[in-house]
Amino acid sequence: MKKIFVSCGEVSGDLYAGDFIREVLKLDPSIKISGMLGPEGQRAGGVAQWSYEELKLMGILEIVPALPKIFALKNSITDEIMKSKPDAVVLIDSPDFHLMLAKSLRRKNFAGKIICLIPPTVWAWRAGRVKNLRRDFDLCLPLFYFEHKFLIEHGVNSKWKAHPLVHDLEGVKVSDTFRKRFGDERLIALMPGSRRYDIDFHLDILLDAAKLLRSKNFLPVFSIAPGLSQSLADELRGRVKVSGFEFWEGEGRELMLASEAVAGVSGTVAVEAMLLGRFMVVIYNMKKINYAILKKLVHVKKISVPNLLTGREVYPELLCQDATPERIIYELENYLSDGSRHEDIDTALREGKALMGDCNAAEFWADSVLALNR
Image 1 (tube, rainbow, N blue to C red):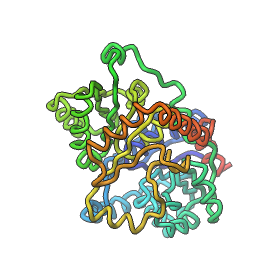
Image 2: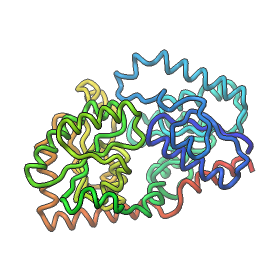
Image 3: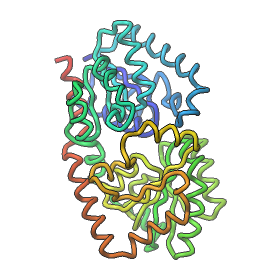
Image 4: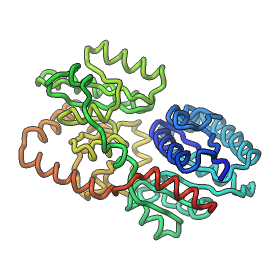
C-alpha cells in the first residue's frame, strides 16, 4: 500500500486511530496516511485534512439540526478520496457518518479497500445495519469477540484477536507526581466524559456526588481527559475549581488505578476500569425523549461492556432518573463496605478481563489491513 485514508470522529476514535497509524508506519514507514483525525492520529504520523471535531455530536435530537453540515462533510470527504485514490479507507467508530460515507464511496465505484475499525453495535440495536457492513466493507475489525462472532454469523468478513486496551494498559502505574499530589487519601475517581453532551448531562450529578463523598471522608477527584478541546477543558476545570474539588489532567487510567473505586459516564472508561480491576458505578443521563426512543430500539438489557461480557451486573447502571448523587454513593459504599460483595465483584472483573484477548490489537489491525493488498 502507498496511501491510506483514516477517519475518526471523537476522542476514543482518535486514540484508536493513533494506535493503528503508529503500527502501520512501523510495518511500512513509506505509507502516506491522511484523513479526518484528532491530535493522537496526528502525533502518530497522520496528516489531518479535517479535524475530528467535525463529528463531535451526541444524541438523536442533537444530530438533526447538524444534518446539512454532516452531508456536506460526507460529500467533501468522498470527493477527496475519489480524487486522491488511497489504497485503503479505514473508518473508525462514528457509525452513522461512516456507514453513509462507505455507501457513498461504493456508489462512486471506489476501487480501494474499505475497512470498518470498531463497527457499530449491530448485535445490540439497529441490526439492519449489518447488511451495510456486509455490502460496503471488505473487512470489519471489532473490539470484542462476541461482536466478531455475531458478524461472522451474519456473513460479514470480520477478524478479531484482542481489545487494544489490553496492550495499552499493561504498563499503567501511579506516578510519583500523582502520589506527591494526593498522598494517602482515599480517592474516588469521577469521570465526567470527553464530549460536550456527556459533561452537560452528567457534571452536575457528579459534583453533587462529590459533596457527599467529601462528607464521608473520601477525596473525590475529577478527571479532565487529555483529549478534550481546549474550550471544554477550560470550562470543566473552571467548574470543578469553583466547586472546591480536585481534578487530574493526566491520564484518567492513572487516576482510576490510584482510586478505591470509580463513578462516571458509560463508555470506554468502564472497560478501562475493568482491566484495571476497579469497581465502577456507571451513569448515563439523557433527554427523556431520547431515552424513550432508545428503549424501543435497543435489544440488550445492559449498556456497560463489563456487564455484557460477564453476563451479570458487575457495575451498577444508573440511567436517567436513577442517576442521582445519592444512588451513586449508595452503590460505592455497598461495594467498599461489604467484604463478600467486594470479593465477588473483583472475581467477576478478572473473568471479564480474561475475555478481552491477549495480543497487541493495533498491530493485528495494521497487519490485517495491509494484508488486504498483498
